[in-house]
Length: 550
Image (tube, rainbow, N blue to C red; front, side, top):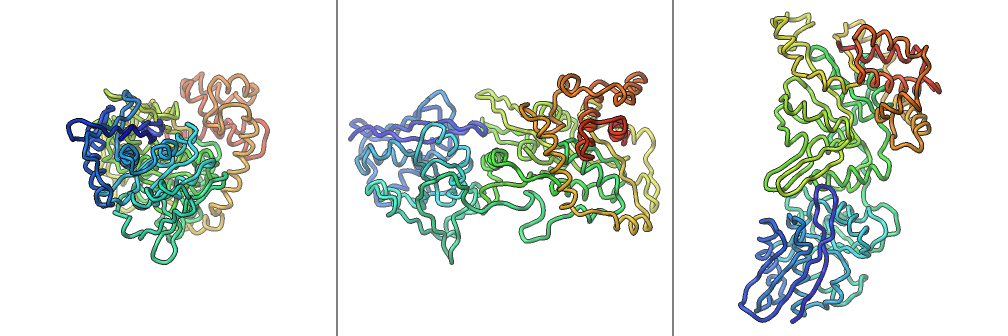
């Protein structure tokens, strides 16, 4: 009997922290004791681990078993520690060599029959393991593709506890070949972030070293868009709204926020759903950021271990502040829609129907690109750099401007309805447009000029490349991120270009924050036109987009 040590990872938000798991099997009153600031899931793991060992034909120590998770001051939550606890106990009992379990990082939940089940947050956990110097990480076989995205370590996929113990006793990676029935291992839990390659009726994964090449299936569609196998949406489908399509192009090129105001059935939702098709694919670093957030939230699509397209989130107007911004009870904090749409699009349809608390909670992440959630036990910060798209009817009934049926809302009702979108929130929206009903003649004529998403995306990509070249060496990547100080110093425009904005400031129709928003859009318009500097035409057009829905 001795003390055995191994390692696991605790997740706080999307940040991983290495945890040392120590097990001591020694004399004393028979029992199992866990220490180290644990939540209920970990406290209950003693039952899961004991049953898993016994059902895998390993003897549970008939002695006093003490398991400590260090550092004790760091909150630890979830079932991700099951595998590490089981291996530490087996090492302390002499069932596996204690020196062989000290270096690897073990991640996974145990079933009562000894199966190793998938868990959430494998990608950020593996990233933390690499940063801590780990060279080997053991993960559930259904999480293997997600873990293999991280270069510089050996990923060991396991399906059962007995297979893992066999490898630890032999020390031969080539002897470990996991053959698991995907239907059996998949218990409907969305925690798994992709699975091993499919071959016939089973999933086969082998332990292998990583040299920097991304593994697994790459996502090519828009996350949160059309179902798998369905045709992707295209901007060409939106006929009769040339100004709406132009606004999408400008917002996609500069990363700007958008507000669309118009009667029901005019295409506002169709426009918003097509915005992600205009955005460039995520860079490698951004793809890992986005994937890590969805892995922690348990929303990573199976078979898509890496999200390479900007996400699209469209919460219902009944969503709570916790659902939109993030939160949770009992110290278990999960990312909300603003973080799940990181590097992508957050669409609020029927925006005035959302609670005022939900709408006002968007103001801080729109400015900082992060959202901080504080609880009694800890504080968690999630990334939240997203493009906000708001859609609203001009009145509660939605029939204002409809030729079929007249609107019964009074002017006071319309004002109260739109007043739910506060001035400070709309001040953070760069482009505002009115979306009207198109006549049959306008629809037929506009179809000849409607461009596909691919054509518009090419111009967006060129504009973003021009902006990236200009912003090289700064912390910003799009025009929407440029600070106010930089707009008035490094990127200050000549007086002639600012003349339309000066008139707006003099008449009081333009605020200081609005001035900065207009300047950012003007730079985007110049990038789309291939100009080195915005002129009066660009600032006038940007001013029109700023005032468009007012």
